[in-house]
Image (cartoon, rainbow, N blue to C red; front, side, top):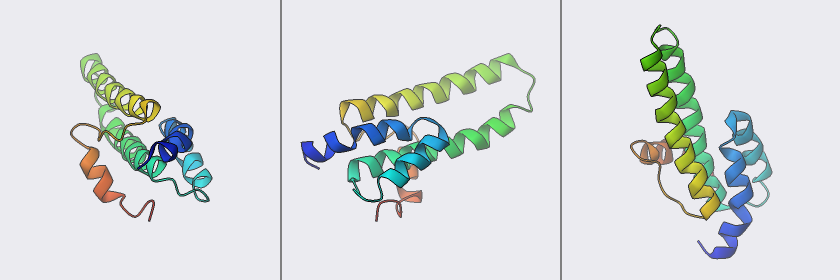
Length: 110
């Protein structure tokens, strides 16, 4: 990926991390450009968003502040890592889960 591709995709990559609605908006807006940098971050953001919803449904059944705070801190760190990568123009895979997201959503961007 060259620097021009990264610069063109930074905005949509950042939008992708702003809830699942942002991911959908970034996906639709990237259909014409087909920017690989944006697709990378779309796959990461979609994976985080869906995993967040799945785990949140389980965590919400617990009545424990410690479990809830651990969940929030874990996902906050992962989201911030992804957002920082989008802003700085890097394709850093999210720790623990990024490779899985890239494989599961590999059809996005092809």
